[in-house]
Image 1 (cartoon, rainbow, N blue to C red):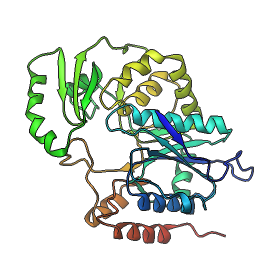
Image 2 (cartoon, rainbow, N blue to C red; image 1 turned 180 degrees about the horizontal axis):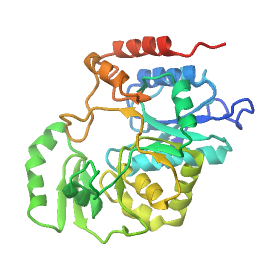
Image 3 (cartoon, rainbow, N blue to C red; image 1 turned 30 degrees about the vertical axis):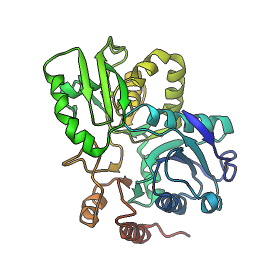
Length: 332
């Protein structure tokens, strides 16, 4: 839910006639204001004509807007943040509504977090997206199909139940309460989860069927505007489906894939072009990358990597900036 909106730092206006294709980078952030500012500078350095839309958690670390105000076509809005709930989807759609409301025309919408960083110069990344001829780059799989990355038990627990979050949990409380989740294995009617806070769920009638096939995938994507516009139209047309997903666990990892893949009209590349490492993941968080992870990340072909802990390893962004400068296409 949108709580407060900061004024546009500089008006986005209409698409620059000299730019054939324009990108919007939608950033969801809640911490590390200095890291966010550095990320925005990196985006604008290699995609100077892009729009940057920042959705900052109203309960997150306070932002110093003075430096961001010096950058062209950067805007900040404040929204209620969350984890594993529908707030991620609401914030994405708020960016779509802002673009529509301001009359800002873009051709691609790319979503990242404040702890992402480009690992390829964005002008080159954008050229790859445009040159593909695809409607979008989005990781997706049939949630119950042979290529699903999730065990069927997880799919059912997340998306065949309607959940209610009772309270947040500290990392220590999550570890202490984790054994309680054993109840999920011995009966089919209710669920208890601790990864996203203390959450309880009840078995529900789903909206899924031949015309709405449940798909999953990464929360991050690069989509052309026709796909984004279809999502906005579907949200308006099917509030029942939206409300169902609103009460699922981790809806951001399924709602867009389910709607777009069920449309059977878009040419999607099943690759989100993001590097993250969930090996030995704790409570569904990717690891914070270190210097040892950079060679693998840089060789991945991804456009962005996450997540970086700027307070703990600020030098990693220096390394990435040097890499981007060395890999950049010389400007005429």
